[in-house]
Amino acid sequence: MPRELPPLILPPLTDPPPPGSRVVRTDDGVDLHVEFDGPAGGGGVGGDTAAPLTVVFSHGFTARLAEWELQRLVLRDRYRLVFWDQRGHGRSAATPLPDATIDRTGRDLAQVLDAVVPTGPVVLVGHSMGGMSIMALARRRPELFGTRVVGAFLLATSAGGLVESGLLGWLLKLVRRLHLLPVYLRLLQLTAPLLERLRWRGSPFGRWFTRRFLFGNRADADPTSVRLVQGLLEETPFPVTAAFYATFLDHEEYGSLPVLSRIPVTVVAASHDRLTPAAHGRRLAEDIGPSAELVMVEGAGHSVNLTRTDVVDRALLDLLERVQTEGRQAG
Image (cartoon, rainbow, N blue to C red; front, side, top):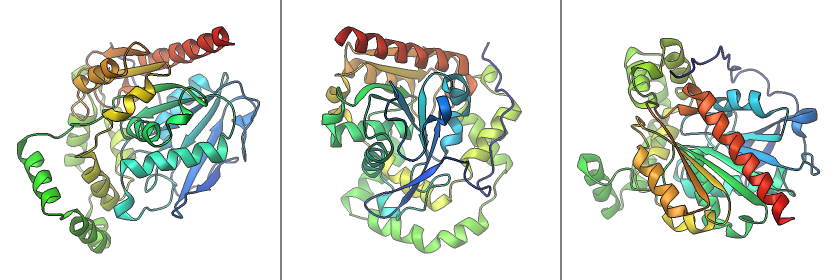
């Protein structure tokens, strides 16, 4: 049976940022919120450059860094931890809608690393969109992998092909063929204030959607867990959600996987994931090759890091041990 979600109180976004957090400004002027944890606070301004290993967490679509709270509790006594809110999410600043793309979040991740983890080995952890950001980073900055980046943990994510058929796939192809994406993004921008005023957060439909697409079988979720995840996801402004969704439809990063094959990788897939189906995790592990280990979580859905915390934590700890063992052998 899956472990129930422990009592988890997420700090409201209206509260002041926690002590020791900082802002990283990207090259296009978007302020990204970054937090630290670990021994002695994990390092604040520049981080503890003497840390033997730093783990950097990238959250999923429409979430924020708080989704890693349960993993933070397990790892904080052993490793330096870095968490960041992706652009338009959480405490990070709004993004121009045309820049709500996976390519851009990969660049953002690179700039976070350059700013707060300038030296020392790093393991990257990404859930859903966060995993896609890691793949985009591998394509843009391959020189980091095998030198600075020594491991990757890809959780409920995909390298591409999420929508290839059906009505949505046909509409996507039409929009691309007619070059209508800029028009779509402009309309989102113009209607953003109205969309936010009309949005019904906490609705029964939103709860059904969250239960259906973020959780797995009947045993995978309880009402408290569903409400918590619904509240977390509904914090992100709707125009940002819609803008990023447009880029997921033609997301394709299979060309970056040979870069990831240089390092130890763990891919975690959930058998009942309706957003990034388990077949995508299997293909990720196969295409990365011998350096990748696949962990399949039966009965779980997309929020597997919250509902199957024990399985995810064990897989992450095993990866970190594998990284450190290989580092000692190489040394």
